[in-house]
Image: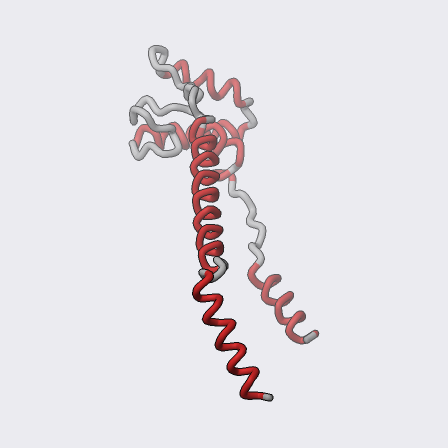
Length: 149
């Protein structure tokens, strides 16, 4: 049993993710900026998800600025200065809470329906026999007991 436990621990340690070093191009600050900045080149997308070559240039510039130590607010100002008529901020989702609430409500409803089905099936199998069937069972029991005597 202890060998099994030791093997399980070894397996879990072997499957653990190795911490990776962030390269300068993949720093968290860069990711935060590109994921939270609307792309003027791809409507409805962020700089992170825009395949445009211009968006790639902007991501490269952001990488360089972060490497130079430019504050995030200054980086956003520099980007906004490039496209003064375009709003680079991502609007918050006004009804974003409704999807989780709907998921909770639907899963609760599903759980209640399934519980009622299981209860109904369990009640149907536990139903007592009809009086005629009970009399027949009692008569058969009496016959079996009489044979044993």
